[in-house]
Image (cartoon, rainbow, N blue to C red):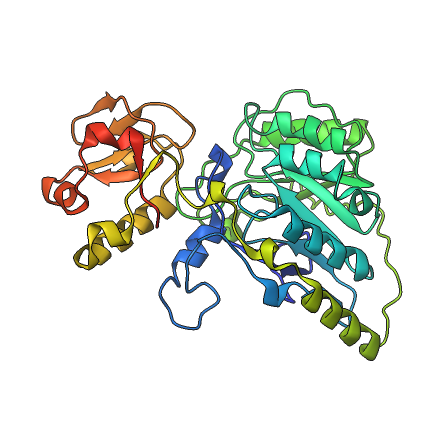
Length: 370
């Protein structure tokens, strides 16, 4: 949680969930993962477990305790609608947002199907509230644009698009039912460039549809040098803001305690789907023996950091990369396709294979439960 976020379109961040897994090209250079993995293994640090997915119930009631009105980015370090998070926990997060209604909440997801399904059912009460803004990421035509239809089908009071990182020209998009659009380029190491014409295309459509347009940044490896001006000016447009009065401190304290005490125990459990990377057989720490712990930790680091489609030259020679979105793996050592679709990196070194007692042809039916 940060009460003074550097993200241009929000005031603060709130993370009742930490960690995530990659599902589309927009995730390739995830800033949240880079930050979290930096502190893996640091005792007592909030990200001691790196970017592993987990609910954080101690943070659930935080917005209720804040005495100033804020615009709050929900789960800047995760995705609330990750398939591993229990429905009951997501519902508890939504109830906190509904109760602490003196804040504006910005909920952003790439899992638009689950957002649609839950906003139509269990979260319908939250979808109708003007202080909770629901959004989807739109990075390209193939993965991002279809999310817009799911968001529209959810029919929230305030719907927004985060077109960041913008990876290609989106062409014509349907902005019916959309109340706000953010556009930005990718930043940090390996940032993929964004063309001005792509941004201008989105801006034009927003103006034609009378949708507020917010231009966040040009991005780049050193984003501060590129700034955030478009055609000589900044674009900081927002949809109408609806806030309520802040209750007194004693009322807020009582309300926060009520939420903490009422949290269902089962909601803190990760679903089975999130407990592994896929497959039918688990190779756990107990099965490989304590002598392999350091190798498991090494593999976990690779799994967490590199599970998106990248070009051949970005991979170090000697490692197998298996497509996170289903497709052939690339063996950078032999420079040929490998007919595997398991989500991992696997060191082709024979010693490393023997440590895990795995053979490359068996990887498609195996997984590591870390």
